[in-house]
View 1: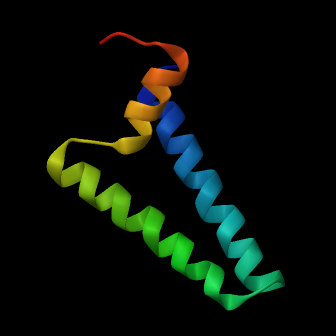
View 2: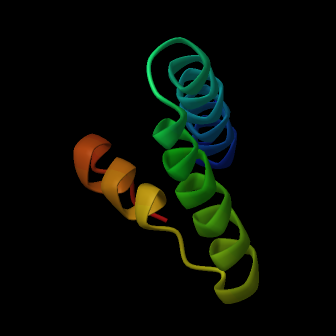
Length: 63
């Protein structure tokens, strides 16, 4: 699996978990959903993604 698919899977998981937490625990968890969405939008505009940098450091991936 390439790094872009991993990032999409992580983002989707974060969004689903935060929606579940907003419904079951506290509505303020939707702020986390908004944060993930804003970061996805930012990375599409700037072509830079913090999660990509983190994963590269964890798995020592060269590109």
